[in-house]
Amino acid sequence: MDKDCTNKYGKSFVECTPEDRTAFLLTMDEAAGKFPPSVWGITLAPPSPVAFFRQLKSLTLFGYYTSEEVGKNILSYDPVPGDYIACMALKEVGNAWNE
Image: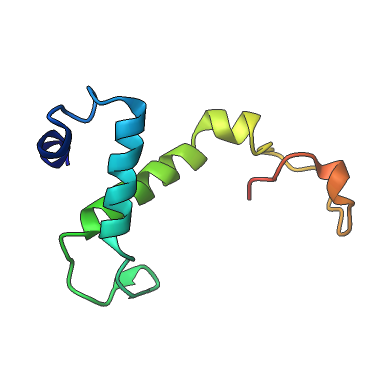
């Protein structure tokens, strides 16, 4: 990935401007295509070279959404839930709830 960025911009990914990084990642995202079909997490097609970027993006998003910072300050994670309320107005909930 860094080699491709160096070939395109003449600099490593870290040395590029934020605009160049965004453009590079969007280009890679478009070129990567979709994940191969799978059932219960088992890939049904042989791995392809474009799977690297999809895997990198997937793991990055997983790391972000399961981090302590996001769980506590953005998603309102509650490790010990209170009463079960079957019907509650959305405006009373506030942030999205982490399941």
